[in-house]
Length: 211
Ligand code: HEC
Ligand code: HEC
Image 1 (cartoon, rainbow, N blue to C red):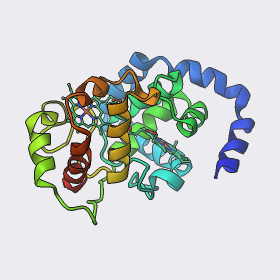
Image 2: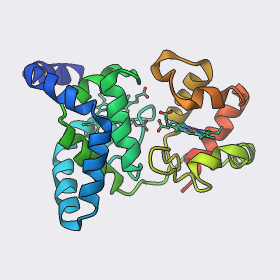
Image 3: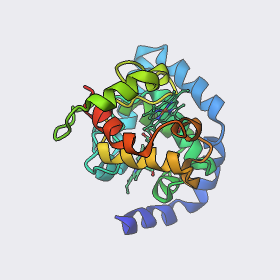
Image 4: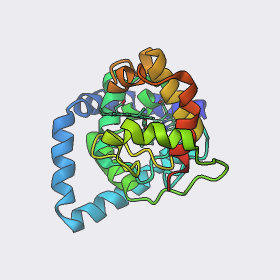
């Protein structure tokens, strides 16, 4: 897979510099997305274009955004503002991920908008093989809900968590807890200081099992 992506990167290396510069203009992309969302016809066109481009993502995130790998996040039903913002963070290097930084370089600002609208429109499949944790529920409904919602639905650039992959959740929460450089500027780093390491797995169980 890395080879395939590598080939694509070389193929578009010159074009991509301008795409990355555009990608960094997050407020502009957000305005564009909000404008499109006011018109049902434009939204449908953007979703269709996003679906086509999403072929590039299917190997890892699933064609419909239901991830086919446990350490890779679902994108289906995620809030489009959050998806768009993560593209921006990957493009600027504020959020570090080798693969997603490469993927980001292949996309124009319009494609990022289209992809965000497409994945947001896809239903997320409920996780199996996770059992809702009572302790996790208690911890979650204690204060995580304030930003991520009682049902884990999130709000704009506060991500939806419900139905997310357990292994990805554990990795993300552990990285936040340890203040790893990959997402060191995230507000979650401070928040996780108040959470015991032992509560991470119960939290992940509860969140993954949320419908
Ligand atoms: C080779 C595998 C791979 C491919 C292909 C790939 N991704 Fe990713 N993506 C990942 C991994 C791994 C992460 C998690 C990064 C991390 O947090 O460490 C990720 C994270 C993301 C995130 C952040 C989601 C979140 O919940 O925080 C978004 C958005 C995203 N990818 C969008 C896309 C899109 C859109 C495409 C196609 C244009 C794509 N990715 C292609 C592997 C991939
Ligand atoms: C003050 C608001 C706030 C609170 C409270 C909060 N979060 Fe977050 N969380 C965010 C924001 C904003 C992000 C997205 C920014 C980022 O980290 O990339 C996020 C990101 C996350 C992510 C990464 C999701 C992804 O798809 O990459 C996870 C997992 C998460 N939060 C879990 C939790 C848990 C569990 C709690 C409670 C212990 C919690 N959050 C409390 C605001 C909050």
